[in-house]
Image (cartoon, rainbow, N blue to C red; front, top):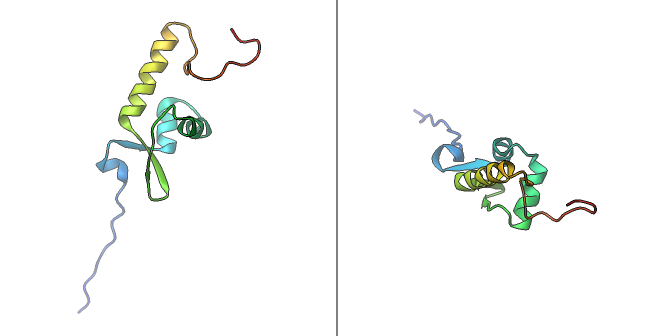
Length: 88
């Protein structure tokens, strides 16, 4: 008699307060490439687990709060980015 074992795919997001890259980008309303740029530049913190990168929920909330704050003041959503020529 053989023992039948089922593999259960567990999503990391169910157990940890993190978002996958695509879900994090959607939550922030940005493109995933922008999110990767922010990760490389250090504007947002990511967690590498194996070959995947996750964004902590606290980082998503921090960026959302910053976007709301700067939008309310009429500034750019990402104030630390370099200005383009001719931009105030």
